[in-house]
Image (cartoon, rainbow, N blue to C red; front, top):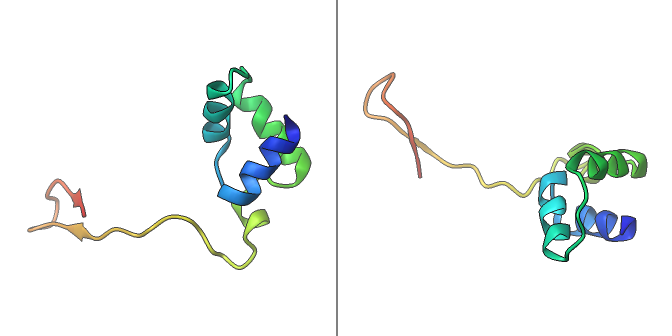
Length: 75
């Protein structure tokens, strides 16, 4: 199980929550905190340890507002 956690973290850059959900889909019930501990023990607790170059898997959105203070919508 720990090898699977490490593989998912390195390949997909998934969070502890996502890994916990994926394990639950495989009928393996484990606490998210336990997954976080395993990631920290493996040296993968923070994203910067996976991607020292600063690369990430998020796409920036643009904020569209007609006036300051308007409820913002992301596109």
